[in-house]
Length: 550
Image 1: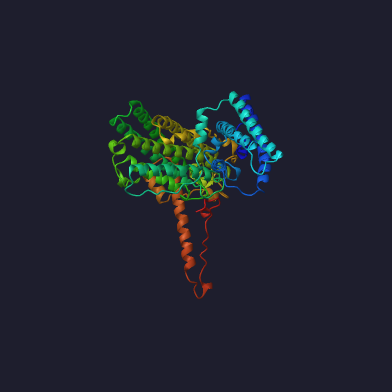
Image 2: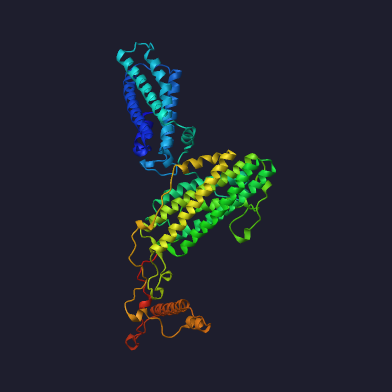
C-alpha cells in the first residue's frame, strides 16, 4: 500500500496548478504516503519480534492477509508495465498518470486502510503465548492510528473533489501493457475468429507504432516506403470497416435490434468510411518526399497487413480475400455477418479496435515524421523544385513546403481517425461492447500539434550546383526524345526540358557502358601503339548530393 502511495506522489499526475480541489488530493497523497510509511516502520518492529519465536500454524487471517498482499503487488505490477524503466511507453500511460486514475487509486487506498485498521486493533488486544510485550502492542496501536489517519485524509479530499464512477471504471479498465503474439490470418477463419484476430492486430499496432515512433529520428526501420504502404493499407481497412458496419446495421434490423442502435451503427459506417480519403491524401504526400533509408521494413507492416486482410474477409463474401483485383467480391450477406446480438457486439468490437488502432497509429506517425524531419532524414527529388533542369544531385534535403504538406496531411488524417474512433465509442457504449475502455485511454491523451516552425531549414533549397556554364547548358542539338516532343508540336517548356534531360541521361549511361566495356578488354601486346581513348566520366554523371541508403 505504501508503494502505491509512492507511485501516486512521484508520477505527478495531479499537477499543483490545477486548482485548489486538486491541491486537496495532492496534500492527501503526501499525507497518506507519510502515514503508510510510518505504519510500515512500526510493523517492522512487530514482525521482527515474532520472527524470533517458534513458528505457529498459520491462522486463517494470516493466509488472507498474504493473499491480499500478493494481489496488491500484482495490481501494482500491472500499472508499472506502462512505465518500463520509469518512462511512459504505452497509450495508457497518460491515463495511468491522469488525476482521475490517481484519485480513484487513492480512494481505493482509503478503503483498504479502513479494512485493515481493525485487524491491527484486533492483534494488539490478542493474548498470544508468550505474552506480547508492551512496546509491541504500542507498535500495533500506532499502525492502527496511521491507517485510520490515512482513511480520514482521503475522505476529506473526496468531499472536496468526489471520485466518480467513471474514475473508478477507468482505473479498473487499465490493461497489462504487453505485446500479444501475432495471429497470422489463414483461410477458413470464422467470423468470431476474424474479429478476435483484428483485436490482436490492433493491440500490436498500438504498441508497435508508439514504440518505434520515438526512434524515427535515427532508425532506418522508419522509411517512406513503409509509411506510404501503411497509409494505403489504412485507407483500404477504413473502407472495409465502413462496409462491415453498414452490413451489420442491416443485419441488426433483421433480428429485431432497436432502431436507435442500428441507426448509430449506420451513421458510424459513413464516418469511418470517409476517413479513407484522408489516408489516401497522406499516402500521396510521399510521392514527393522520401527518406534516407528505403524498403518496407517497419515492424508494424505485418500487423497492418493482418488487420487489412481480416477486415476485408469480414466485409466481402470471399473467405480467401486479399487486396488484389483478382480477389474482388461483393459485400458479405448481412445475415451471414450478424445473426444475433452477440455477433453484432463482436463485429462492433472488431471495427472499434481497428479504427482505434489506426487512429493511434496516425498520432504516432505524426510524431515519427516530425522526428525524421528534425533528424534530417527527409529528402525530395530536385525534379520537384524550380531549376530542376540544372540538377546534378539525385536528392536534396526536403524543403519546408514539402514537409509542411506531409505533416498537414497526416495531422488532418489523425484528426479524422480520432473522430471516427469517437463515434464508435458511442456505438460501443450503446451496444455494451467490451471495447468501450478504448475511449478512456484516448480521452486521457491529447495529441500534440507539430509545426515546421520548430525545425531548421536551409535559407533556399536549390538543386543547381553547376561548376561551369558548359555543365549547366542543355545540349544545343535535340536528342531523340526532345526531337519527338518537338515533332508532336508540344510547346510546354517544362515538357521540352524534361525530354532534354532524358536525352542527356541516356548519353551519360551510354558513356558509362563504354567505359565499363573498355575496362574489361585485355590490353594489347604493344600498348604503346594503341592510342589513348581519352574517355572520362563526364561531369554530368557525378552524383554530388546525398543519396538514400538502399
